[in-house]
Length: 124
Image 1 (spheres, rainbow, N blue to C red):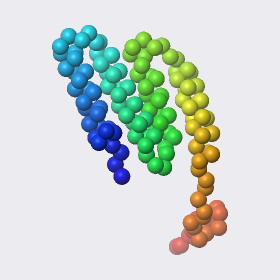
Image 2 (image 1 turned 120 degrees about the vertical axis):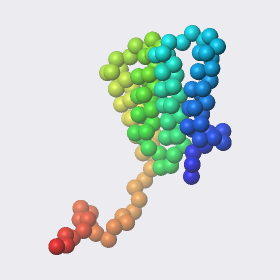
Image 3 (image 1 turned 135 degrees about the horizontal axis):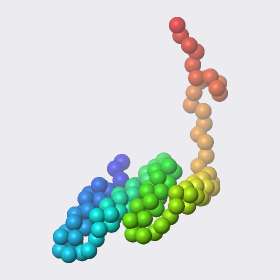
Image 4 (image 1 turned 30 degrees about the vertical axis):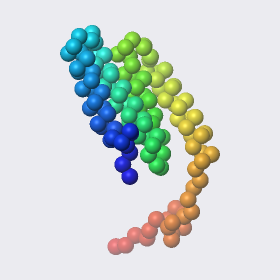
């Protein structure tokens, strides 16, 4: 199953946002190169987060990676976060997601014919 947002793949939305920013800058919107790059990075990271949320099974690292990217990129607009603050925010998000997801996830039954810790017998 492909993830779609309003009937389109996420990459299409990233291209549309980048094109819109390029047109706005061409018609006089005053943005620095850093701000344009930040918009592109944030748009990509936000859409990556949306895809991570919509994908099953849920991948925590995909969402936390996207959040970390957004927080880092926002520095292009003047939000001055240290690496420690970004790391603490992503860690807190990991903890919250672990608590929320643990209530909704249960381990599957064993699918291997081997006892725990034994994967196969070596063959020579």
